[in-house]
Amino acid sequence: MPYYLRVLRVVGAIEFKAKYAGAALGYVWSVAKPLAYFGVLWLVFAHLLRTANQTHDFTIFLLVGILLYTFFVDTVGAMLPSIVTGGSILRRLAFPPILIPLSASVGIAITFCANMTALAVFIAIQKVTPRLEWVFVPALLAELCIFCVGIGLLVAALYVRFRDVVQIWELTAQLLFFASAIFYPIGILPAWAQKVAFLNPFVQVMQDVRHAVLGGPSGPNDVTAATVYGGAAGRLIPILIAGLVFLGALAFFRREGRYFAERV
Image (tube, rainbow, N blue to C red; front, side, top):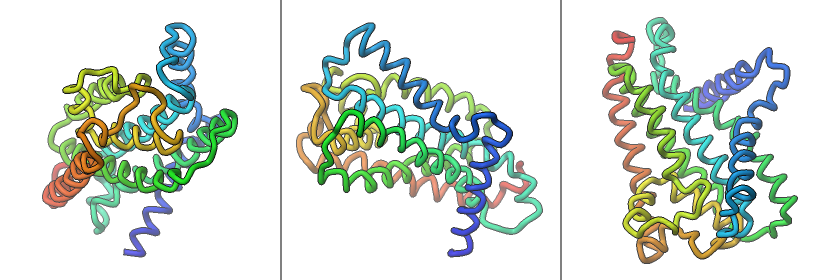
């Protein structure tokens, strides 16, 4: 196990560096993408449509959503083709196939850590008061990582059999961007839609991180899973879904992994 962890760390760092090799701005591109999303949405909703008055600290509210969404989508997107693109390695070397998609996710995690510096800067500019709730943020991010890896392992294994998975995921990612309350308070949705939305662990993590960073709801329509499902125990529903997705995807990946070298 320690050996495999070292392999993941080294390969992930190599992939992160290779991604920006030869680029004039280098690692700046890792921050440019989420900030570009943020800039356009902030301009449209905070100034042109003036819907940001429904939330306090709209800047932090929006940036948290953009950063977490980018991490979620990029992690799954990087893991999805990893087995197929790494097929030659599987045929030549004997090692657990799971290391290939996991190494792809490590590179995205490094990018996410770099992006978090942008959030820290905006928190300082907005003079957000440090709170005890901030200690829960790492646990929430760990939950999101488990969910991302679960989805990533599932689509990576499916892609070996069905190449349409790429198009399906791209469409799903676009729909999630508009359905996950990234740039609007989720409480404006009908009650039934809120309950459906919080079945997605990403939405639960995003809302809980927002509340932890800002010290509570940013407006009357800013709700969490506990609010929607009628109690603190309601937060366990998306957490259990994240765990079940990860375990199910892991079992499916291991079953399919026996045939990867033959199919890629």
